Image (cartoon, rainbow, N blue to C red; front, side, top):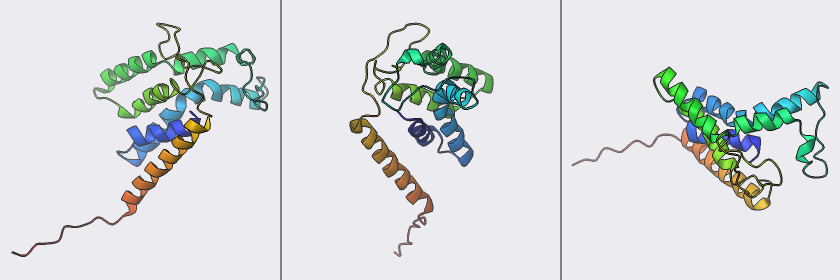
Length: 172
């Protein structure tokens, strides 16, 4: 799935308690891609790395530096997500639900990444097994994703700005 959708889904699912909670969940939803491919884009922007050429479709995975592959394994592991979630829960003495946006990111990526380009290593480091899903860029996935996000955010914004209905007093 595209990075912005990850942030929006994460915020929708785990960040509705407050504005701070929303932005925290949004950022955590983006984090797995930012800490893998984002680092490559920043390095390429300042001349420290070669930017892969996406102009003719997906570049060969061999053109992506090995450190990106390793960071992708780390950030897209559901095993590591569960470990970090549990560790933070123990340290904070409460679950930090906004971290669920990371887990949701990984779960959504499992069926929306194919073997053609960066299948999701959700069992890493326990196993290298990956699921051959359907690319998120296919219209059959992309269009419903954007449509449902638009409808849900529209509904939530409408609910937020709609005047509260007050029950009428019933005379007896």
